[in-house]
Image 1 (cartoon, rainbow, N blue to C red):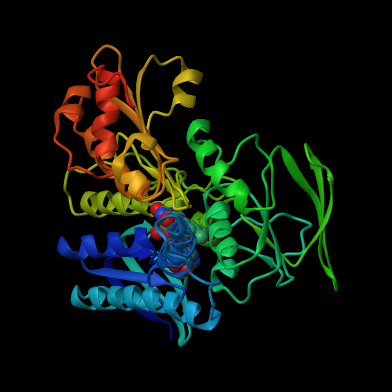
Image 2: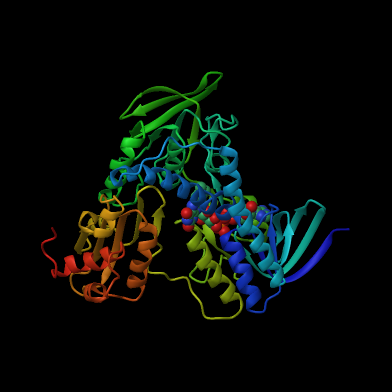
Length: 466
Ligand code: FAD
C-alpha cells in the first residue's frame, strides 16, 4: 500500500526558495513537509550555483590579485594547481551549508522527503522516493521547483566536453581552449575561474554587449580588464552549429565574427528554463505557461488560491535573494499574516573580476523610457583605497530624481562592488535623497566612501576631483 502523509503545508523543492519557505512556515507554527528529489538540500544555489561558484571565484580573484603585487616589490612564481584539492575545498563549503540546512530542518520538525514529486490533485502530491511511493495530502502548497540550464537543440549536449554550468563547476579538468557561449553573468563568472586556472578563453555573445541589461559604461570597465586575459570576445555573433569529433568540438560562428574554430571544451551558458512543466501542475489546476513559468500575484498565489509558487519558476530575475524573499511572503500569507512581495529593487551582481553590481533604475532603462535623471559618478582613480588595492579602474554611479533628489538607481564596477551595492539598495528602499547619502559620514578610506562621494558629485558639493 502507498504510504499517505498528512500535512498543513507542502513545499516542493528545497532550493533557497523552498527551504526558506519551509523554515518560515514551521517557525509560524505550521506542520511542514519538504519534498526534494536530491539527497542534499539547498537546490541549485547551494549545490551547483551561487555557493560553489563563489568559492572558486574567490580563489581565482586572489590568483589574479597577487599578480598586481609586483608594483609593491612582491612577486610570486607560477601557481601550482592541485585540481583535486580545489574541488575538495569547494565541496567542503557546499557540504557545510547543506548539512547545516538538514540540521535546521530537523530542529524545526520539518519533515524532509527525498523523492520526485508530481501533483495528483489540488490537495495531493505523489512522491517517488528511493524506498517507494509516498503520497502527501496537504492543505496548502508552495511550489519552489526552480530551473535548469537551457539546452540548444542540435548541439551535442550528450558529449562530456559540452558543459553546462553544473559540469563546469564540477571542475573535472582545465581545457586548453574553452569556448563560452553566452556573455551573461554565469558565463562570465565561469570565464574568470577557468582563465585563472590557465585555460585560453573565447566568449561568444548574440547581443551587442556583454551582460545584456547592465549599463554599457559599467560593462566597458569589466571588458577592458578581461580583454587582456581572454583570447577573443565576439559580440553580435551566433553559434550556427557545433559537432563533436575525436580532435575536439568544432564550432561554426555566424554574424559579426563568422568562422570555424576547434575547442577542447565548450560551456553553454545561454540561460535557464523553469522546471514548471515537470511537476504535473495540471492535476492541481495550476496554470503553467508554455515556457514552464507559473504566474503568481503579490502574495505569491497561483491561479489556485491555496497553492503558491516562488523562486526561479515564477520568473526573472532568477536570483537566490529574490527566491528567499518571495518564500517568506508565501509562508507568511499561509500563516495568515499580511505580507506581500513588493520590493523597489532586486540587486544584480556579477562576481567577476572586477565585480559589477547594479540596482534600481539603469541609465539604459531611463533613456528607453524617457525618465529624467541626474547623475553622480565617482571614479575610483580618485579613491585612495582603490589606489591602495592597485585597482583604479572602477567607478560608482548614482542616479537621482531631478525633482525630489531621491535615489533612483546605482551601478558600481570594481572589486567588492557586490558588497557595496547593499548600501544603495537600503538607500532606495528608505527613500534616501542626494543629501542623505552625501551627508552620511562614510568611513575613510574605504570603497563604500565612493557612494557618499558620488552623491556629493551629483549634489555639486564636489566639483573638481583631482
Ligand atoms: P532551485 O535552487 O533551482 O531549487 C529547486 C529545487 O527543487 C531543486 O533542488 C530541485 O532538485 C527541486 N525539484 C525540482 N523539481 C522537483 C520535483 N518534481 N520533485 C522534487 N524536487 C524537485 N543567484 C544569486 O542570487 N547569486 C548568485 O551568485 C548566483 N550564482 C549562480 C551561479 C550559477 C552557476 C547558477 C546556475 C545559478 C546562480 N544563481 C545565483 C541563481 C540561483 O541559483 C537561483 O536563482 C536559485 O537557486 C533559485 O532558487 P529556487 O529555490 O527557485 O530553485
